[in-house]
Image 1 (cartoon, rainbow, N blue to C red):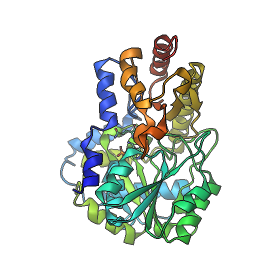
Image 2: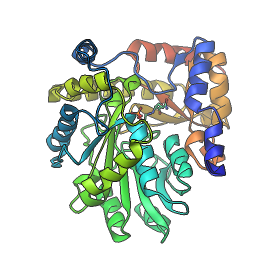
Image 3: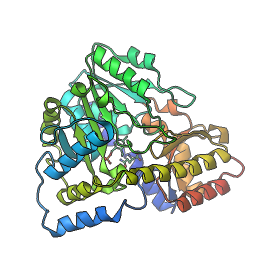
Length: 387
Ligand code: PMP
Ligand code: GLN
């Protein structure tokens, strides 16, 4: 392991730290993004049935055939992207493994990888394990907007990859069609690979749609698209994800993946086959339900005095605790469980320079409404008189 990788992997991960603090203080955990209950019961039953039916040995490295077919169908059904399930889908141990395998497959020491900042913390660790350099492009305030010119300016002759995340964790930004085309144009002009982390693809609000970069004409050939059953079906502990893309790119992703997990979760892969058979109404209900919870949490936090950036997608809301008197989001989140009985995530972990996050904090709304209300009640009580 090179020194850079060691630096980013030696510390305890923020999600582990904050979930442990939440437990110690019996706090309402609005930090790590995991729902309190799973999706439709049929999904669980399908996984149980697979266990009982004896599907308990290694799956094939690229995943069981019915799941690859189901993922290919999903891409065609939702986005009109034709995908060959035999050579253009790889099932992974969560989206995390797909991202790691894609980065390790294509990034060599000295290569640059451009990301929108703030960025999901896994990206920095993976790029650093590959010996590459992360080049952040700051989403600008107010509202974490995407700046096409800044993205274009970040590309150098060492840039190998754009690692794009929309809907975006932690800000909730959803790139519109025009912005996705702009990203595609930059990638094509500079002959870059795009790794598109689309795990929140079904969580987009206010009538918006998710626009996969792979659907832009000419982009399929240079894009690896990644998603996860954990998010869409509320089974984050299953760790079943996937990558789709052209066979020449996916064979390289699979080549790395076979030396990471080899393959994982045979019975759970069967459960996800059932999940992907859900009717469109399942996704519509998911969206409506999360949008209601978003409004509940975002409105509640605004009432308490946080500066709220209302997310267009994902199940996270980023706020600035500065108006309450906080200056350091990490310190705020380390104290919040004890002081208020609520846990959150400091956005400082999503920046190359943690200081740039100021008092930005991320709360999740993937919890039942009663839990969100209780979290807000505790915050109201604990924050009386400011921070
Ligand atoms: N990308 C993003 C943006 C995420 O928020 C997550 C969730 N932790 C992942 C990837 C990883 O997904 P998985 O749990 O399926 O590995
Ligand atoms: N992606 C989830 C989040 O951002 C969980 C991350 C994790 O636990 N590794 O909260």
